[in-house]
Length: 409
Image (cartoon, rainbow, N blue to C red; front, side, top):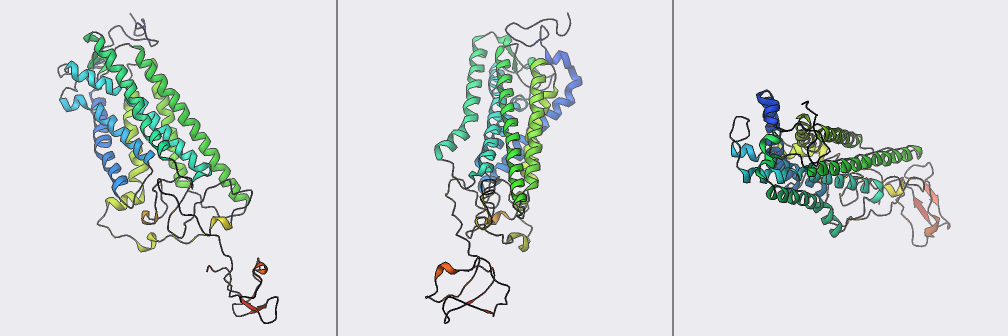
């Protein structure tokens, strides 16, 4: 009988009758097993916890909870994937693991991909929410709790369903040989349901990615047409775009796994996403590196950002809806469109999403020494070309105003 000559009962996916992954791949796939173990062990269970601790406890490298949540989901993914490795029965030559261990890992593994797909979807939703001009709006506590707990609710649902199916069927349904890297169910519709759910979530992630690109493009075009200086975070845009492309290929790998469950490449690809998160959102960030390299002295010039004009004095009716405030306020807070990647030192940042942002004061274009009798409605809109000691006569002959240029009060 050919490889795809039969359909497993209750499944849409063609499989060999025994689906013995160990026999199908043999010892030739041992290097792939070692690579898969390395990715989960080093990136997901060692480096990512360090990165999460940096985001939570460091005052100089704060990040939004949705990004921290994505990192935490991949920490769980690494721990669940290595249960056989911790038990010392991960190799094909090792004895068959205990049934309780195999059922536990299978139940947890079938909730991983739905969990991280929902977490990334929530992250992309937050990025779109801020880029849409809501940077100064504070997300409600209830909404934030729902956003952060939804991945784990989905994971609990799939894991519970897998546990019930594993316990109510025969011992041959759950084996290590069904998954090669980990214990898995044999030919059950739950695998198809999990793959379809993950595929739908990935479609939503890519849709939000496209919407985010359109928002950033409109914002850039509006600023350019207004003749304003563009403070555009191209590094951030490139990082988010590359991460979205990687998720898109992950969706393709999920489709491959759905129709060819003997292929090991989808599992290897998914194992690399934790490393990509570590690189994109962690070790390539200057503020994170400064926290980790604590013995190095900071450059004083990089600690104080150069002053920028207040956005309320630059926005026009045609561009005010295209970009949120991304300029420093007098309190040092920095409200930018995508609140994850500080362009300057993290010491000038306050990314606490639960605190109400301090509004910027109204801009004062002129610094005027005005007598009390001067009509306040007669302030010049544009200063004449005059030196600082020149006099401009007011409405009365005994009133004079010193032009100080565009200095702030």
